[in-house]
Image (cartoon, rainbow, N blue to C red; front, side, top):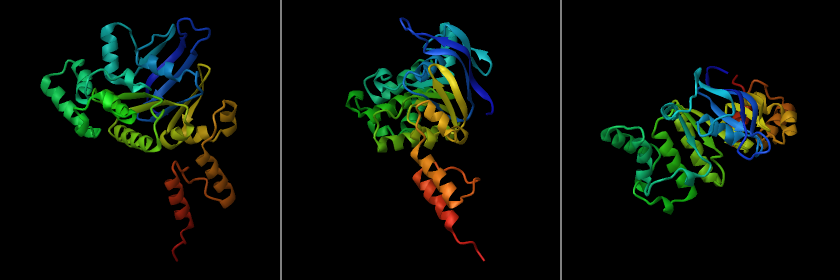
Length: 285
């Protein structure tokens, strides 16, 4: 698993007026440097866990720790905590607060009490990294959903967090927009940011993640390397989580074509084609 970046210890949380806990004695952790997918059916506690991780909610019981440092809930501690952790909401409208793209990204930088020169430098860098230069002065309400998601994500990343949390980022996106999001996430991860995505889309998680955490009714059920988790098809079915079609196809091919078990499982159709092409190459004399 590697180094634990964020730890949840005996976490209980029930929403005001709720009849059952959203999280019930949960113990889990987020490994550093990984691309982490948080899976589970609607109501399993995924979003609640992200909100607790960002300090938006306070557990009724348990502790949250960053590198063994306990989260405290006074304003100063929360401000410091949120400089390390960024959260992108499922609905970008909940995050966009200014009139234009540039103003919205700059707003989060002003809260860090940076100098004008540093704000200008970070704003320009962020607009360039997210390909938003041509939209910098556009009103936010003129943007598409995919563009709004990109602006919201840019605003979070302008603060340069070490850990980025995303709640259902692919919801309502078409295949092109999802592909663009994947490219952005790969770039962010390659630059050194640990990522956690809460999703019920197992095909997306299969393609993207290398570490999986599965919640069910507010409790941790499974966690581990993606290949190990998806190998447990029967257990996933019990949790009403369907195994991705590409994984099932790969298992059939391995069984029927006698492919080596050592071959890495393909995460995309292109990757599958490449592996089959390499396997079919005639050996050199």
